[in-house]
Amino acid sequence: MKTIILIILLLSALAFAMEGPDLILIGDLYVPQSNGFSLACNTYENRGVDVVLCNASLYNISSLNWIFAGANVHSRFGSLSVSFRDYGISELYKSTKLSLYLHKPVYKNISLGLGYSRKEYNYGDNFYNSASDVFSFGAGLKLRSISLSALIDNLTYKKQSFNNDSELCFSLCWQADDLLTFHALYFNDNRKHERLSFGQNLILAKQLNLKAGLLTCPDVYYAGFEIVYKSFVFGYTYFDIGGLPDCMRITLSYR
Amino acid sequence: MRVLFWIIITVLISVKPVNCEIIFSEVLANEPEGWVALEWIEIYNDSSEHADLHDYMLVDGDNTITFPEGTIDSAYSYLIICRRLYSTDSGVCFENYWGDSSGVWGDAESEYYAVCEAGISLRNSCDTLYLLNSDSIIIDQCIWNDPADGRSVERNDISDRFSDWHPCYDPSGSTPGRANSACPSDNQSYTLEVAPRLISLSGTSRFITISYTAPADVKINLTVYNDSARKLKTLLDNSYNTYGTINWNITDDNNHPLSPGLYIISFRITDAINAFKSIPIVIAP
Image (cartoon, rainbow over all chains, first blue to last red; front, top):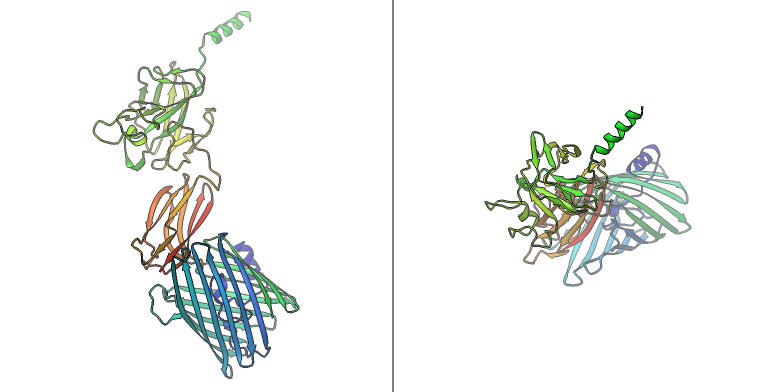
């Protein structure tokens, strides 16, 4: 499967959709699902609302559930994203997260973003409960067809040793033309773990987007497509994950 | 011509049939845990008659071993010929390793099969062992080549003395006195148990116990991932140790304690068979 995905990557002008930090499903979305923070300098000329609902099958563990729902409101003043994620295993672990992300152009091609998330955890069927508040800060710069952005994520104002998984991310996105986009991301978390991600997105036809890419540490290859019908978008992404069973994600969006 | 015919008939009648029903079924040459007196040979009587083996011989290189007087292999039964059945100097012996350490063989439920002691001395690495009947005719042989520590070699089919041999697939390493292990399919003959599945960083215990068993001749990888599939801790890396218990102190490879959250213990075996099992665990604050 990896080989097939690599061949697709190399031989075709495929595809990428800026998956952002939720590339491996569990991570959280900070910005509009359809854009991603590497496109942070968009001026949102297309005003409107995106609604997205995702469900995933993870690591072949049937009891592991992951559901994401989000809405993004775009205006000429910027965008506001609200998202909710529910994740866990019944009677063992449950995690919910409610996020707000405000993204606003501030000067010409520069934009800033601010995110707030409330995370709640239940462990062992409510035996242990905890909650934390985390913040995200983003900044973007758009230079013609290239977008640069930086994001500091998962910052806690309480320095709890067990909940200090902040991460720094830099991204570069090149929109080759209206149909083809490439991206590259670099992640570095507070444990000095580094990751790289590369991908591409191709709008093959008006009704069909193709995307593919890879991520290091863990080694994840993914490929997917989106079918557009009027304002509805159905997406499917397949993730080949090195050390663990594969994952799949199904997305239904209204734009 | 007629004379020749009668000579052939006479020769055929006078020759005793070779007893093909006594065969080697299993040999443990490389003792477990570095012991030197635990080796044994298992033979099987694949007939409905008792077999008196006191005239039979085992030949191993220059060593010729005769069976003790009165050695009987019952019909369709196993007989173990061990190097040391009882211990005289509180050292390890067959009875206290595979029996109940009472000093008497046959007084426990697990000691249901026949065992006799003989002066065998098998090479651990590679060797050939012959079984000769009372007419000094070779009726069976067993060849082993560098078996793993504590791992016996077993005959694929004990009703066929021409069948091949394989390393014992049983997680314990050998099956004395019982049916040989079958080649496992991908989804069986391995176990993975994790306890507790939920552990608190504020609790008194900071260990998760992981017990596993696997067939012989497989590589085992035991790894801990977080729920974003990042590898955090390698507990076993291509290990050939097919059973064991690990007390993991919920730290990563850099010895940093893990944050609360969901983690996945991945158990992957490769080579002789391929199988995968994952168990999610949770670390609470």
